[in-house]
Amino acid sequence: MTESLLPDQGALYRVDKFVVPPAARAAFLERVTATHAVLRAQPGFVRDLVLEQNGGPGEFNVVTLVEWENAGVVAAASGAVARAHAAAGFDRQAFLAANGIRADIANYGALAL
Image (cartoon, rainbow, N blue to C red; front, side):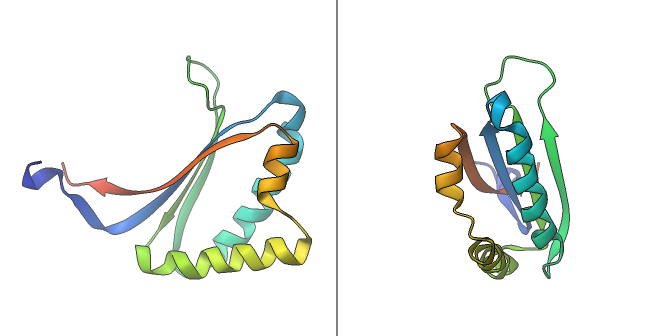
């Protein structure tokens, strides 16, 4: 890998991709809205997007992206989401399984091209 392709050590991007069956869309978006409300209130939050596929052959029909100032703020934000889910009695894995939703979840860093 050349020097210019090394990851930038600044912002961290959380990209979650989902296959959401039509019957689960409303409940799923309700949960995304609640979770993103918690994320937006966290220190280090920069911006977020919730995208829905409207064309093309891809299998993931909903993608969420959250930009964080740096990797150091993510653990606290994850803890805040976990506490909010626990307080609401929400189990993410059980919800996904019960609704036939598949997820691909990862953190990304920008490449310096």
